Image (cartoon, rainbow, N blue to C red; front, side, top):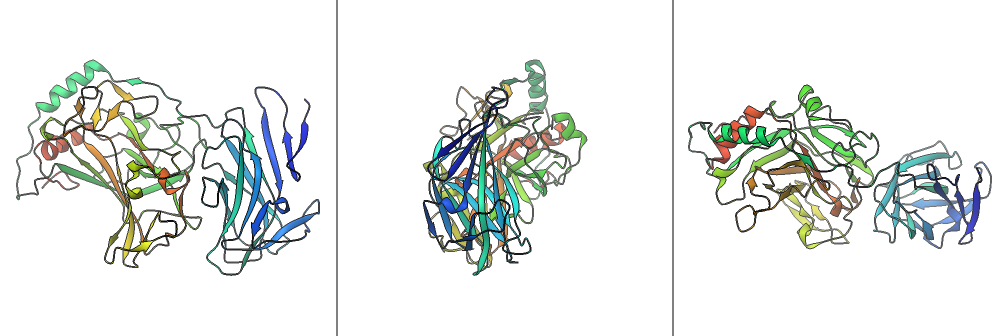
Length: 452
């Protein structure tokens, strides 16, 4: 096979791999010193293989700009960065598109390599799907004030063979209509537990679930394709991975209270200054109701799944309602970050997010091609005729450590506007049914045990 090398935009070397439909992939190699603009950078002769010059003396906030970098056609890409560091402070180098705060294409970890001329290659998977020619930036982030890293080159391999498949990959998944009708009849024939102890009259119960693990998997969006997703923080079910099914979740473990909830919940991993930070104290998973008549709410069918939010959303939209991040606790928010996106929390307060799913179901499908079309929000307190079945109104409340630095918070899917969540129902059916019947249908606030 022929390999074609082109000269693009002066110092950019573009190598196009073997030209066939099965494996065509374009690799863009960019020499660090070929920047179009910079802040805080100096160049020097390098001791790296191949010689030439590298960019050095880079510290927190310094950046390099490169114009007309081709990110390919599909938006699926991998990125590598050649770096050296004698700093023990650590940090990250962000690869961003279009601006210093634009979509995050990848994050490279910086740690000491032994000296300023001891070179290593770091690889980051794509975090945001971007296509075509873009201006890209390398932005240095570090908690230290001094020099952090030297850079020699970076590469972007745009994979046109779809090794990271586009959304969506799943289609309509029908429910067993006869079984669902029988389950619905049996549910409404169930006698709720009598109300005791004068509970708050709010239709609600909850599960308290812990963070379980992290993987570049998504069994709803890209099932059976391990490593094909951005990084997710998995909550509840302890076995969730790309191959998860209802059967595998029910056979596995859970860290939820109650233990009858073996459902899988997941969100994109959150980073502060390039370091992954997990919610603390567990994630509260609420099941409630926003319809005027909660007595009509019925349980999720087994194997039901859905997502909320948009992993590709990188800028503000009206539905984000101020990004839905706030500071909970004593002192609350003391201000906003310089870009106005994130709250700055008092040392006694926690960055918090409330992720809310749709409540109304079409009654016909366990899943849909975009994992959203089979569900909808209530309208004027009732489910629309297209989605007439009210299910429990699911939401997650997540809180991160007290006083966490919010000046440089990103998600594995990109900006904080890309927050999204996934739900794969694996509750023990009788336990879920009893809670819906007792707590939601009777408009009574229950605890994790389903009692008052």
